[in-house]
Image (cartoon, rainbow, N blue to C red; front, side, top):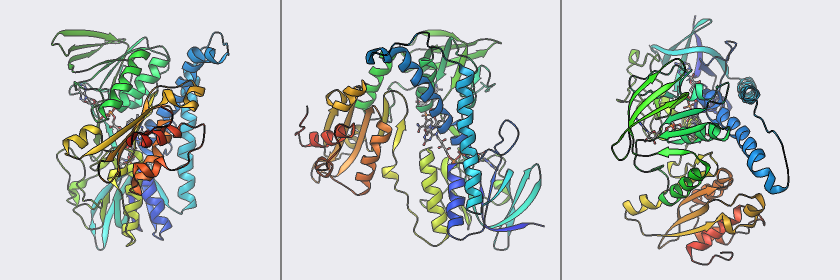
Length: 475
Ligand code: FAD
Ligand code: NAI
Protein backbone atom coordinates (compact mmCIF):
# COMPACT_ATOMS: atom_id res chain seq x y z
CA UNK A 1 0.00 0.00 0.00
CA UNK A 2 1.56 3.34 -0.97
CA UNK A 3 1.33 6.52 1.09
CA UNK A 4 0.01 9.46 -0.89
CA UNK A 5 1.49 12.96 -0.66
CA UNK A 6 0.97 16.18 -2.55
CA UNK A 7 4.73 16.73 -2.72
CA UNK A 8 7.61 14.27 -2.37
CA UNK A 9 11.05 15.84 -1.99
CA UNK A 10 14.09 13.61 -2.62
CA UNK A 11 17.09 14.91 -0.67
CA UNK A 12 17.17 16.90 2.57
CA UNK A 13 20.11 19.20 1.88
CA UNK A 14 19.50 22.96 1.91
CA UNK A 15 17.61 22.73 -1.39
CA UNK A 16 15.37 19.84 -0.37
CA UNK A 17 14.63 20.49 3.29
CA UNK A 18 13.83 24.13 2.64
CA UNK A 19 11.58 23.21 -0.31
CA UNK A 20 9.78 20.69 1.94
CA UNK A 21 9.24 23.22 4.75
CA UNK A 22 8.04 25.98 2.41
CA UNK A 23 5.69 23.54 0.61
CA UNK A 24 4.26 22.45 3.98
CA UNK A 25 3.80 26.10 5.01
CA UNK A 26 1.80 26.57 1.82
CA UNK A 27 -0.61 23.79 2.82
CA UNK A 28 0.74 20.79 0.91
CA UNK A 29 1.02 17.33 2.44
CA UNK A 30 4.78 16.79 2.15
CA UNK A 31 7.24 13.90 2.41
CA UNK A 32 11.01 14.37 2.39
CA UNK A 33 13.39 11.44 1.81
CA UNK A 34 17.09 11.50 2.66
CA UNK A 35 19.63 8.73 2.87
CA UNK A 36 22.49 10.41 4.81
CA UNK A 37 23.51 8.39 7.87
CA UNK A 38 25.23 9.63 11.00
CA UNK A 39 27.97 7.57 12.68
CA UNK A 40 25.33 5.49 14.49
CA UNK A 41 23.45 4.80 11.25
CA UNK A 42 20.63 7.20 12.12
CA UNK A 43 19.27 9.99 9.92
CA UNK A 44 21.43 13.06 9.37
CA UNK A 45 19.39 15.50 7.28
CA UNK A 46 21.07 18.64 5.99
CA UNK A 47 22.98 17.15 3.09
CA UNK A 48 26.51 18.00 2.08
CA UNK A 49 26.12 21.45 3.59
CA UNK A 50 25.39 20.27 7.11
CA UNK A 51 27.35 17.01 7.20
CA UNK A 52 30.52 17.53 5.15
CA UNK A 53 30.35 21.05 3.75
CA UNK A 54 29.45 24.55 4.87
CA UNK A 55 28.86 23.89 8.56
CA UNK A 56 31.73 21.54 9.53
CA UNK A 57 34.23 23.46 7.39
CA UNK A 58 33.28 26.71 9.10
CA UNK A 59 33.57 25.04 12.53
CA UNK A 60 37.14 23.93 11.72
CA UNK A 61 37.98 27.30 10.18
CA UNK A 62 36.85 28.96 13.42
CA UNK A 63 38.85 26.61 15.66
CA UNK A 64 42.00 26.93 13.57
CA UNK A 65 41.62 30.72 13.44
CA UNK A 66 41.40 30.90 17.25
CA UNK A 67 44.54 28.76 17.40
CA UNK A 68 46.39 31.04 15.00
CA UNK A 69 45.25 34.16 16.90
CA UNK A 70 46.41 32.70 20.21
CA UNK A 71 49.76 31.74 18.70
CA UNK A 72 50.51 34.74 16.56
CA UNK A 73 48.30 37.72 17.33
CA UNK A 74 47.35 37.74 21.04
CA UNK A 75 50.81 39.11 21.87
CA UNK A 76 50.00 42.27 19.85
CA UNK A 77 47.17 42.90 22.33
CA UNK A 78 49.47 42.40 25.32
CA UNK A 79 48.15 38.93 26.03
CA UNK A 80 50.81 36.33 26.63
CA UNK A 81 49.96 32.69 26.35
CA UNK A 82 52.43 29.87 26.66
CA UNK A 83 52.38 26.38 25.19
CA UNK A 84 49.33 26.84 23.01
CA UNK A 85 48.35 23.35 21.90
CA UNK A 86 45.70 22.03 19.57
CA UNK A 87 43.80 18.94 20.60
CA UNK A 88 42.68 17.84 17.13
CA UNK A 89 40.36 15.14 18.47
CA UNK A 90 38.55 17.75 20.57
CA UNK A 91 38.35 20.18 17.67
CA UNK A 92 36.84 17.45 15.48
CA UNK A 93 34.44 16.34 18.26
CA UNK A 94 33.25 19.95 18.61
CA UNK A 95 32.73 20.13 14.85
CA UNK A 96 30.72 16.87 15.02
CA UNK A 97 28.55 18.32 17.79
CA UNK A 98 27.88 21.45 15.71
CA UNK A 99 26.86 19.17 12.81
CA UNK A 100 24.57 17.14 15.10
CA UNK A 101 22.86 20.29 16.39
CA UNK A 102 22.07 21.18 12.80
CA UNK A 103 20.84 17.64 11.94
CA UNK A 104 18.58 17.68 15.00
CA UNK A 105 17.41 21.18 14.16
CA UNK A 106 16.18 20.01 10.75
CA UNK A 107 14.37 16.99 12.22
CA UNK A 108 12.69 19.38 14.67
CA UNK A 109 11.70 21.71 11.81
CA UNK A 110 10.19 18.77 9.91
CA UNK A 111 8.05 17.91 12.96
CA UNK A 112 7.08 21.52 13.52
CA UNK A 113 5.99 21.92 9.90
CA UNK A 114 4.40 18.45 9.66
CA UNK A 115 6.77 17.22 6.95
CA UNK A 116 6.94 13.39 7.00
CA UNK A 117 10.57 12.31 6.92
CA UNK A 118 11.73 9.01 5.40
CA UNK A 119 15.29 7.78 5.99
CA UNK A 120 16.54 5.93 2.93
CA UNK A 121 17.23 6.21 -0.75
CA UNK A 122 14.46 7.63 -2.90
CA UNK A 123 14.09 6.56 -6.51
CA UNK A 124 11.51 6.89 -9.24
CA UNK A 125 9.19 3.91 -9.68
CA UNK A 126 6.80 4.89 -12.43
CA UNK A 127 4.42 7.61 -13.52
CA UNK A 128 0.98 7.00 -12.03
CA UNK A 129 -2.32 8.68 -12.57
CA UNK A 130 -1.80 12.29 -11.45
CA UNK A 131 1.78 11.91 -10.21
CA UNK A 132 4.71 9.59 -9.61
CA UNK A 133 5.47 6.53 -7.56
CA UNK A 134 8.61 6.97 -5.46
CA UNK A 135 10.30 4.05 -3.77
CA UNK A 136 12.18 4.43 -0.51
CA UNK A 137 14.82 1.83 0.26
CA UNK A 138 16.25 2.01 3.75
CA UNK A 139 15.78 0.09 6.96
CA UNK A 140 12.16 -0.18 5.80
CA UNK A 141 11.01 -0.37 2.18
CA UNK A 142 8.20 2.06 1.44
CA UNK A 143 6.32 3.21 -1.59
CA UNK A 144 5.04 6.77 -1.79
CA UNK A 145 3.15 8.65 -4.43
CA UNK A 146 3.58 12.35 -5.01
CA UNK A 147 1.45 14.57 -7.19
CA UNK A 148 4.61 16.68 -7.53
CA UNK A 149 8.23 15.68 -6.97
CA UNK A 150 11.21 17.87 -6.14
CA UNK A 151 14.62 16.31 -6.80
CA UNK A 152 17.29 17.86 -4.58
CA UNK A 153 19.91 15.14 -4.50
CA UNK A 154 22.94 17.45 -4.48
CA UNK A 155 26.48 16.67 -5.53
CA UNK A 156 29.60 14.70 -4.62
CA UNK A 157 33.32 15.41 -4.90
CA UNK A 158 34.79 14.90 -8.37
CA UNK A 159 37.58 12.29 -8.48
CA UNK A 160 40.82 12.72 -10.37
CA UNK A 161 40.61 10.17 -13.19
CA UNK A 162 42.12 6.92 -11.94
CA UNK A 163 42.64 8.18 -8.37
CA UNK A 164 40.01 6.87 -5.98
CA UNK A 165 39.25 8.56 -2.68
CA UNK A 166 40.30 6.19 0.10
CA UNK A 167 39.47 8.88 2.72
CA UNK A 168 42.63 7.86 4.58
CA UNK A 169 45.40 9.35 2.44
CA UNK A 170 43.54 10.55 -0.64
CA UNK A 171 40.75 12.67 0.72
CA UNK A 172 37.61 14.33 -0.55
CA UNK A 173 35.98 17.07 1.51
CA UNK A 174 34.55 14.26 3.67
CA UNK A 175 37.90 12.82 4.81
CA UNK A 176 39.48 16.28 4.92
CA UNK A 177 37.02 17.20 7.68
CA UNK A 178 37.74 14.07 9.72
CA UNK A 179 41.53 14.00 10.11
CA UNK A 180 42.53 12.89 13.59
CA UNK A 181 45.97 14.53 13.70
CA UNK A 182 47.82 17.39 12.08
CA UNK A 183 49.66 16.03 9.01
CA UNK A 184 53.20 17.24 8.45
CA UNK A 185 52.80 17.73 4.74
CA UNK A 186 49.65 18.00 2.72
CA UNK A 187 48.84 18.70 -0.92
CA UNK A 188 45.59 19.82 -2.41
CA UNK A 189 44.77 19.49 -6.08
CA UNK A 190 42.61 22.45 -7.09
CA UNK A 191 42.88 25.89 -5.55
CA UNK A 192 39.18 26.67 -5.66
CA UNK A 193 36.99 27.29 -2.66
CA UNK A 194 37.59 23.98 -0.86
CA UNK A 195 41.33 23.98 -1.58
CA UNK A 196 41.74 27.43 -0.04
CA UNK A 197 39.40 26.89 2.93
CA UNK A 198 40.69 23.44 3.91
CA UNK A 199 44.27 24.45 3.06
CA UNK A 200 43.88 27.36 5.49
CA UNK A 201 42.58 25.12 8.28
CA UNK A 202 45.54 22.74 8.15
CA UNK A 203 48.14 25.44 7.43
CA UNK A 204 47.02 27.29 10.57
CA UNK A 205 47.46 24.11 12.59
CA UNK A 206 51.04 23.70 11.37
CA UNK A 207 50.82 21.57 8.21
CA UNK A 208 53.04 22.48 5.27
CA UNK A 209 50.43 22.89 2.55
CA UNK A 210 51.02 22.97 -1.21
CA UNK A 211 48.08 23.60 -3.52
CA UNK A 212 48.44 22.52 -7.14
CA UNK A 213 46.19 24.42 -9.52
CA UNK A 214 45.75 23.77 -13.25
CA UNK A 215 44.70 27.30 -14.20
CA UNK A 216 47.43 29.88 -14.81
CA UNK A 217 45.48 32.56 -12.91
CA UNK A 218 44.63 32.48 -9.20
CA UNK A 219 40.87 32.39 -8.47
CA UNK A 220 39.91 33.25 -12.02
CA UNK A 221 36.20 33.74 -11.14
CA UNK A 222 37.11 36.46 -8.64
CA UNK A 223 37.73 40.11 -9.57
CA UNK A 224 41.40 40.27 -10.67
CA UNK A 225 42.37 43.05 -8.27
CA UNK A 226 40.76 41.25 -5.32
CA UNK A 227 42.31 37.89 -6.29
CA UNK A 228 45.77 39.51 -6.47
CA UNK A 229 45.31 41.07 -3.02
CA UNK A 230 44.17 37.73 -1.59
CA UNK A 231 47.12 35.89 -3.17
CA UNK A 232 49.54 38.38 -1.57
CA UNK A 233 48.01 37.65 1.85
CA UNK A 234 48.09 33.85 1.35
CA UNK A 235 51.74 34.01 0.18
CA UNK A 236 52.60 35.94 3.34
CA UNK A 237 50.91 33.28 5.47
CA UNK A 238 52.94 30.53 3.79
CA UNK A 239 50.02 28.92 1.96
CA UNK A 240 51.85 27.76 -1.14
CA UNK A 241 49.80 27.82 -4.35
CA UNK A 242 51.42 26.61 -7.58
CA UNK A 243 49.54 27.79 -10.65
CA UNK A 244 49.49 26.39 -14.18
CA UNK A 245 50.47 22.85 -13.19
CA UNK A 246 49.56 19.59 -14.91
CA UNK A 247 49.13 16.79 -12.43
CA UNK A 248 50.60 13.49 -13.63
CA UNK A 249 50.80 10.32 -11.57
CA UNK A 250 49.31 10.12 -8.09
CA UNK A 251 50.41 7.04 -6.15
CA UNK A 252 49.25 6.28 -2.65
CA UNK A 253 51.37 4.05 -0.40
CA UNK A 254 50.44 3.05 3.14
CA UNK A 255 51.70 6.28 4.65
CA UNK A 256 52.46 8.67 1.78
CA UNK A 257 50.97 10.06 -1.38
CA UNK A 258 53.50 10.65 -4.15
CA UNK A 259 52.52 13.11 -6.84
CA UNK A 260 54.31 13.98 -10.05
CA UNK A 261 53.38 17.11 -11.92
CA UNK A 262 54.61 19.47 -14.58
CA UNK A 263 55.03 23.01 -13.30
CA UNK A 264 54.14 26.21 -15.17
CA UNK A 265 57.65 26.31 -16.71
CA UNK A 266 57.30 22.79 -18.05
CA UNK A 267 59.63 21.16 -15.52
CA UNK A 268 58.77 17.77 -14.03
CA UNK A 269 58.28 17.96 -10.26
CA UNK A 270 57.76 15.41 -7.51
CA UNK A 271 55.91 15.96 -4.27
CA UNK A 272 55.56 13.50 -1.44
CA UNK A 273 52.93 14.26 1.21
CA UNK A 274 51.15 12.59 4.12
CA UNK A 275 47.69 13.54 2.89
CA UNK A 276 46.22 14.65 -0.41
CA UNK A 277 42.92 16.52 -0.71
CA UNK A 278 41.41 16.46 -4.18
CA UNK A 279 39.19 19.52 -4.59
CA UNK A 280 38.60 19.89 -8.33
CA UNK A 281 34.88 20.55 -8.31
CA UNK A 282 31.78 18.45 -7.77
CA UNK A 283 29.48 16.19 -9.80
CA UNK A 284 25.68 16.04 -9.55
CA UNK A 285 24.13 13.06 -7.71
CA UNK A 286 21.78 11.37 -10.14
CA UNK A 287 22.89 7.73 -10.11
CA UNK A 288 20.48 5.63 -8.12
CA UNK A 289 17.53 7.93 -8.80
CA UNK A 290 16.23 5.61 -11.52
CA UNK A 291 15.66 8.68 -13.68
CA UNK A 292 15.39 6.50 -16.79
CA UNK A 293 12.26 4.75 -15.42
CA UNK A 294 10.27 7.94 -15.95
CA UNK A 295 12.38 9.54 -18.71
CA UNK A 296 13.79 12.37 -16.56
CA UNK A 297 16.24 14.24 -18.78
CA UNK A 298 19.89 14.54 -17.68
CA UNK A 299 22.67 16.44 -19.44
CA UNK A 300 26.06 14.98 -20.35
CA UNK A 301 27.45 15.87 -16.88
CA UNK A 302 24.64 13.87 -15.27
CA UNK A 303 22.88 17.03 -14.02
CA UNK A 304 19.10 17.26 -14.27
CA UNK A 305 18.06 19.55 -17.10
CA UNK A 306 15.79 22.35 -15.86
CA UNK A 307 14.46 25.62 -17.21
CA UNK A 308 14.79 28.98 -15.47
CA UNK A 309 11.94 27.98 -13.12
CA UNK A 310 13.57 24.64 -12.09
CA UNK A 311 10.99 22.68 -14.13
CA UNK A 312 12.32 19.43 -15.59
CA UNK A 313 11.11 17.83 -18.84
CA UNK A 314 8.45 15.93 -16.83
CA UNK A 315 5.21 17.59 -15.73
CA UNK A 316 5.13 17.98 -11.95
CA UNK A 317 8.84 17.13 -11.49
CA UNK A 318 11.15 19.91 -10.35
CA UNK A 319 14.86 19.93 -9.47
CA UNK A 320 16.90 22.38 -7.37
CA UNK A 321 20.36 22.98 -5.95
CA UNK A 322 23.65 21.31 -6.86
CA UNK A 323 21.94 18.69 -9.01
CA UNK A 324 21.01 21.38 -11.58
CA UNK A 325 22.86 24.17 -13.41
CA UNK A 326 24.20 27.26 -11.68
CA UNK A 327 26.53 27.89 -8.77
CA UNK A 328 26.88 25.08 -6.23
CA UNK A 329 26.01 27.11 -3.15
CA UNK A 330 23.74 26.32 -0.22
CA UNK A 331 21.89 29.64 -0.37
CA UNK A 332 21.28 29.23 -4.13
CA UNK A 333 19.80 25.79 -3.41
CA UNK A 334 17.60 27.25 -0.65
CA UNK A 335 16.33 30.08 -2.83
CA UNK A 336 15.44 27.61 -5.57
CA UNK A 337 13.70 25.38 -2.99
CA UNK A 338 11.50 28.24 -1.81
CA UNK A 339 10.78 29.42 -5.34
CA UNK A 340 9.74 25.92 -6.49
CA UNK A 341 7.40 25.43 -3.50
CA UNK A 342 5.79 28.78 -4.26
CA UNK A 343 5.46 27.97 -7.97
CA UNK A 344 3.78 24.64 -7.07
CA UNK A 345 1.27 26.69 -5.10
CA UNK A 346 0.60 28.92 -8.09
CA UNK A 347 2.65 31.79 -6.70
CA UNK A 348 5.49 33.64 -8.44
CA UNK A 349 8.65 32.30 -6.81
CA UNK A 350 11.74 34.15 -7.94
CA UNK A 351 15.52 33.70 -7.80
CA UNK A 352 17.76 36.53 -8.93
CA UNK A 353 20.93 34.86 -10.23
CA UNK A 354 22.56 38.29 -10.63
CA UNK A 355 22.61 38.92 -6.88
CA UNK A 356 23.77 35.60 -5.43
CA UNK A 357 26.68 36.36 -3.13
CA UNK A 358 29.85 34.24 -3.00
CA UNK A 359 32.04 33.97 0.07
CA UNK A 360 35.37 32.22 0.59
CA UNK A 361 35.89 31.87 4.33
CA UNK A 362 39.66 32.18 4.40
CA UNK A 363 41.54 34.83 6.26
CA UNK A 364 41.22 37.37 4.77
CA UNK A 365 37.70 36.47 3.69
CA UNK A 366 36.77 37.02 0.06
CA UNK A 367 33.20 37.95 -0.87
CA UNK A 368 31.51 39.31 -3.93
CA UNK A 369 28.22 39.91 -5.69
CA UNK A 370 27.56 40.91 -9.27
CA UNK A 371 30.05 41.24 -12.08
CA UNK A 372 33.84 41.51 -11.85
CA UNK A 373 35.86 44.25 -13.57
CA UNK A 374 37.14 41.74 -16.14
CA UNK A 375 33.56 40.63 -16.92
CA UNK A 376 32.41 44.23 -17.40
CA UNK A 377 35.32 44.82 -19.78
CA UNK A 378 34.50 41.63 -21.71
CA UNK A 379 30.82 42.67 -21.87
CA UNK A 380 31.79 46.14 -23.15
CA UNK A 381 30.03 47.88 -20.25
CA UNK A 382 31.22 51.40 -19.34
CA UNK A 383 31.82 51.50 -15.60
CA UNK A 384 33.40 53.48 -12.80
CA UNK A 385 35.38 51.80 -10.01
CA UNK A 386 35.97 52.88 -6.42
CA UNK A 387 38.10 51.14 -3.81
CA UNK A 388 38.77 51.73 -0.14
CA UNK A 389 41.48 49.90 1.84
CA UNK A 390 40.81 48.47 5.32
CA UNK A 391 44.16 50.03 6.26
CA UNK A 392 42.31 53.36 6.41
CA UNK A 393 39.38 52.02 8.48
CA UNK A 394 39.46 52.71 12.22
CA UNK A 395 37.62 49.53 13.25
CA UNK A 396 39.96 47.36 11.15
CA UNK A 397 42.95 48.99 12.86
CA UNK A 398 41.38 48.35 16.27
CA UNK A 399 40.76 44.72 15.30
CA UNK A 400 44.35 44.43 14.12
CA UNK A 401 43.21 43.18 10.73
CA UNK A 402 43.78 45.73 7.99
CA UNK A 403 44.36 43.44 5.01
CA UNK A 404 42.35 44.09 1.88
CA UNK A 405 39.77 46.45 0.50
CA UNK A 406 36.20 47.01 -0.62
CA UNK A 407 35.68 47.65 -4.32
CA UNK A 408 32.60 49.06 -6.02
CA UNK A 409 31.84 48.87 -9.72
CA UNK A 410 29.04 51.13 -10.96
CA UNK A 411 27.56 51.94 -14.33
CA UNK A 412 29.39 54.95 -15.82
CA UNK A 413 26.15 56.68 -16.81
CA UNK A 414 23.45 55.64 -14.35
CA UNK A 415 25.73 54.93 -11.34
CA UNK A 416 23.79 51.67 -10.71
CA UNK A 417 25.94 49.22 -8.72
CA UNK A 418 27.10 46.40 -11.00
CA UNK A 419 29.38 44.54 -8.62
CA UNK A 420 30.89 44.73 -5.15
CA UNK A 421 34.05 42.82 -4.26
CA UNK A 422 35.61 42.54 -0.84
CA UNK A 423 38.76 40.96 0.50
CA UNK A 424 39.29 41.55 4.18
CA UNK A 425 37.89 41.07 7.68
CA UNK A 426 34.24 39.91 7.92
CA UNK A 427 33.74 40.21 4.17
CA UNK A 428 31.10 37.45 4.58
CA UNK A 429 28.92 39.79 6.66
CA UNK A 430 29.74 43.01 4.81
CA UNK A 431 28.62 41.63 1.46
CA UNK A 432 24.96 41.53 2.55
CA UNK A 433 24.66 45.31 2.31
CA UNK A 434 25.83 45.12 -1.30
CA UNK A 435 23.35 42.31 -2.06
CA UNK A 436 20.47 44.37 -0.66
CA UNK A 437 21.65 47.43 -2.57
CA UNK A 438 21.83 45.51 -5.85
CA UNK A 439 18.42 43.87 -5.28
CA UNK A 440 16.96 47.37 -4.95
CA UNK A 441 19.02 48.49 -7.97
CA UNK A 442 20.70 51.14 -5.84
CA UNK A 443 23.39 53.50 -7.12
CA UNK A 444 26.79 53.89 -5.48
CA UNK A 445 25.59 57.38 -4.49
CA UNK A 446 22.75 55.75 -2.49
CA UNK A 447 25.25 53.78 -0.38
CA UNK A 448 27.55 56.79 -0.10
CA UNK A 449 24.69 58.85 1.41
CA UNK A 450 23.58 56.25 3.97
CA UNK A 451 24.73 56.77 7.58
CA UNK A 452 26.98 53.86 8.62
CA UNK A 453 27.83 53.24 12.28
CA UNK A 454 31.23 54.40 13.49
CA UNK A 455 33.58 52.73 14.03
CA UNK A 456 32.59 49.78 11.86
CA UNK A 457 34.03 47.80 8.99
CA UNK A 458 30.94 48.78 7.02
CA UNK A 459 32.30 52.32 6.80
CA UNK A 460 34.79 50.88 4.30
CA UNK A 461 31.78 49.95 2.15
CA UNK A 462 30.43 53.50 2.31
CA UNK A 463 33.88 54.92 1.54
CA UNK A 464 34.34 52.59 -1.46
CA UNK A 465 30.98 53.85 -2.73
CA UNK A 466 32.23 57.43 -2.25
CA UNK A 467 35.42 56.45 -4.09
CA UNK A 468 33.36 55.73 -7.22
CA UNK A 469 32.83 59.52 -7.37
CA UNK A 470 36.43 60.13 -6.25
CA UNK A 471 35.37 61.71 -2.95
CA UNK A 472 36.50 59.44 -0.13
CA UNK A 473 36.65 61.25 3.19
CA UNK A 474 39.14 59.10 5.06
CA UNK A 475 41.69 58.18 2.39
P1 FAD B 1 23.17 18.49 -0.82
O1 FAD B 1 23.47 19.39 0.30
O2 FAD B 1 24.27 17.73 -1.47
O3 FAD B 1 22.05 17.49 -0.30
C1 FAD B 1 21.57 16.45 -1.06
C2 FAD B 1 21.01 15.40 -0.13
O4 FAD B 1 20.32 14.43 -0.89
C3 FAD B 1 22.08 14.62 0.65
O5 FAD B 1 21.70 14.52 1.99
C4 FAD B 1 22.10 13.26 -0.02
O6 FAD B 1 22.45 12.22 0.88
C5 FAD B 1 20.65 13.14 -0.43
N1 FAD B 1 20.42 12.21 -1.53
C6 FAD B 1 21.07 12.11 -2.71
N2 FAD B 1 20.49 11.18 -3.50
C7 FAD B 1 19.46 10.67 -2.77
C8 FAD B 1 18.46 9.71 -3.04
N3 FAD B 1 18.40 9.07 -4.20
N4 FAD B 1 17.57 9.44 -2.06
C9 FAD B 1 17.61 10.08 -0.86
N5 FAD B 1 18.51 11.01 -0.57
C10 FAD B 1 19.41 11.32 -1.53
N6 FAD B 1 28.02 26.43 0.06
C11 FAD B 1 27.81 27.64 0.60
O7 FAD B 1 26.88 28.33 0.18
N7 FAD B 1 28.59 28.12 1.63
C12 FAD B 1 29.62 27.41 2.12
O8 FAD B 1 30.30 27.86 3.04
C13 FAD B 1 29.89 26.14 1.57
N8 FAD B 1 30.89 25.39 2.03
C14 FAD B 1 31.11 24.16 1.50
C15 FAD B 1 32.19 23.42 1.98
C16 FAD B 1 32.47 22.18 1.45
C17 FAD B 1 33.63 21.39 1.99
C18 FAD B 1 31.62 21.65 0.43
C19 FAD B 1 31.87 20.28 -0.14
C20 FAD B 1 30.55 22.37 -0.06
C21 FAD B 1 30.30 23.64 0.47
N9 FAD B 1 29.25 24.43 -0.01
C22 FAD B 1 29.04 25.66 0.52
C23 FAD B 1 28.35 23.95 -1.07
C24 FAD B 1 27.04 23.43 -0.46
O9 FAD B 1 27.33 22.41 0.48
C25 FAD B 1 26.13 22.90 -1.54
O10 FAD B 1 25.95 23.88 -2.54
C26 FAD B 1 24.77 22.55 -0.96
O11 FAD B 1 24.89 21.57 0.05
C27 FAD B 1 23.83 22.04 -2.05
O12 FAD B 1 22.60 21.73 -1.48
P2 FAD B 1 21.64 20.63 -2.12
O13 FAD B 1 20.44 20.58 -1.27
O14 FAD B 1 21.49 20.89 -3.57
O15 FAD B 1 22.46 19.26 -2.02
P1 NAI C 1 36.02 24.76 -7.36
O1 NAI C 1 35.27 24.70 -8.62
O2 NAI C 1 35.81 25.90 -6.44
O3 NAI C 1 37.58 24.72 -7.66
C1 NAI C 1 38.16 23.67 -8.36
C2 NAI C 1 39.55 24.10 -8.79
O4 NAI C 1 40.24 22.96 -9.24
C3 NAI C 1 39.52 25.09 -9.93
O5 NAI C 1 40.36 26.18 -9.63
C4 NAI C 1 40.03 24.28 -11.12
O6 NAI C 1 40.74 25.06 -12.05
C5 NAI C 1 40.93 23.28 -10.42
N1 NAI C 1 41.15 22.05 -11.14
C6 NAI C 1 40.23 21.29 -11.80
N2 NAI C 1 40.82 20.18 -12.30
C7 NAI C 1 42.13 20.22 -11.93
C8 NAI C 1 43.24 19.36 -12.12
N3 NAI C 1 43.11 18.21 -12.79
N4 NAI C 1 44.42 19.71 -11.60
C9 NAI C 1 44.56 20.86 -10.90
N5 NAI C 1 43.54 21.73 -10.69
C10 NAI C 1 42.34 21.40 -11.20
O7 NAI C 1 35.74 23.36 -6.65
P2 NAI C 1 35.92 22.86 -5.15
O8 NAI C 1 36.93 23.66 -4.43
O9 NAI C 1 36.08 21.40 -5.27
O10 NAI C 1 34.53 23.18 -4.50
C11 NAI C 1 33.35 22.68 -5.12
C12 NAI C 1 32.24 23.64 -4.97
O11 NAI C 1 31.72 23.59 -3.65
C13 NAI C 1 32.61 25.11 -5.16
O12 NAI C 1 32.65 25.47 -6.51
C14 NAI C 1 31.51 25.79 -4.45
O13 NAI C 1 30.40 25.85 -5.31
C15 NAI C 1 31.22 24.86 -3.30
N6 NAI C 1 31.89 25.37 -2.11
C16 NAI C 1 31.52 26.58 -1.63
C17 NAI C 1 32.12 27.11 -0.52
C18 NAI C 1 31.73 28.46 -0.05
O14 NAI C 1 30.72 28.96 -0.51
N7 NAI C 1 32.46 29.09 0.86
C19 NAI C 1 33.15 26.38 0.22
C20 NAI C 1 33.50 25.14 -0.41
C21 NAI C 1 32.87 24.65 -1.51
